[in-house]
Amino acid sequence: MTTGTPTARRGPGYLLLAGLAALVITVSGVIYVGFGGRPAGAGSPAGGPGTGAAASSGSWVGTWATAPAAAEPHSPHGHPDRSLRNIVRTTAGGTAARVHLSNVFGTAPLTVGHATVAVAAAPSTPTARAGTMRRLTFGTEPSVTLPPGGRVVSDPVRLRVPQATDLLVTVHTPGLSGPATYHPFARQTSYLAHGDRAGAIEGTAYTEPTPYWRYVTGVDVWTTETTGAIVALGDSITDGIASSTGANRRWTDFLAERLRTEPGAPAHSVLNAGISGNRALADAPAGSPSNGDSAFHRLERDVLSRAGVRTVVLQLGLNDLMRSPRRMDAETLVSGLEQLATRARQRGLRVVGTTLTPFGGHAQHTPRLEAVRLAVNERLRTSTAFDAVADFDAALRDPQAPHRLRAAYDSGDHLHPSDNGNRALAAAVDLAALRHAPGTDATEL
Image 1: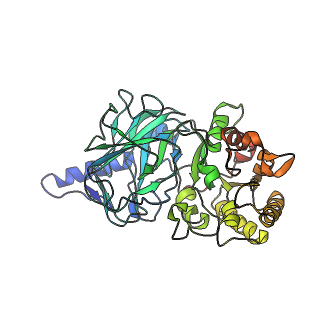
Image 2 (image 1 turned 180 degrees about the vertical axis):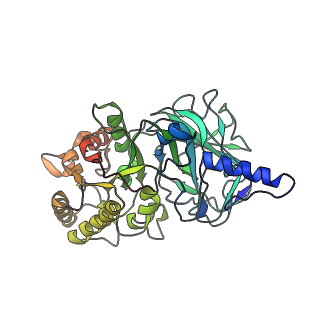
Image 3 (image 1 turned 120 degrees about the vertical axis):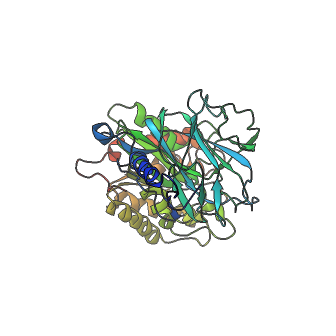
């Protein structure tokens, strides 16, 4: 079992074992377990499968991600002797995979006794496709213990990962731990089973559905085809809070579809870092911890540390207006968003801003808030802090009542877009704005 940085076990044959372990780690990738640091090897071809020219032609790129939001309530001891099968959707394919696990909101050490990754046999099913189940290791060890606040990246496994396909990422937690680090609004059903079923190909043991993703925060693929990743840093609109469960109809899913199918589109994956209730300028108050840390505090963890990230789309600001303490000054809010953009651009990323969408008819809407929203949007449209601005307001507003969502794009709560509204948001992103100009690649992370 790995705890912290892996070390060789001494005894007969120690030198031979140490040499073999060093070779495996050099070829397979670097392990990282720690407190708040970034995963090692992210964005770098080093640590990819293979050697020589074949390895240098590929790179690690994130194919799926989620933002850890909080410690799961009502599970103070975690999920002892349970297997948690998370179903996640790829946006890029590759020939190998590695998995990110997190105990960032944990209050006690988390031991993962058995972890696996597999291609799902069908969308949203806990059954694995035959021949795709792979056991994950951590510094060549079959288990790992994450301290409170810790994160880890698995060793790579050879696996042909298709794009636009469900993966099964399963962890078995054998003992007591603190509450699970989770993402509460996955808009995807995952599953739990009793005992160690991490390696089970059939999904029959996974009888307990769950709307959460637990522990897993990302999957990277080794690819020669995808040139980078786009991260959407946002709130419930990016989280897809009202999109159809299990259908992958968040606006980021529709954007990934455009990138796969439209001629001339950049060969990029799309990573969703939305957290419902999230704000740009303030952390979640004690009464609503699942709304997450502010974008300022999670930019490094949820965007800049992602493998192969080239562009970030900032979709934030409505909760800063709507939630107490409210930011009623347009200049302050825009300045905060521009500071986020500056930090990302300093790391070599392109930054796409987005205007604030209409919410007339929602219980929180007032004429005063509407005036601030319009002032924010006016400033965003002319700001020079962004490489481009996607006009999400114009994409969704009702032409006859621009303070409201167009009826065909309204999920019914007058705030969150429907599936059709999410498609309209994706259509509002200029794909050319996502492409890096020659010589402006992001800093390797």
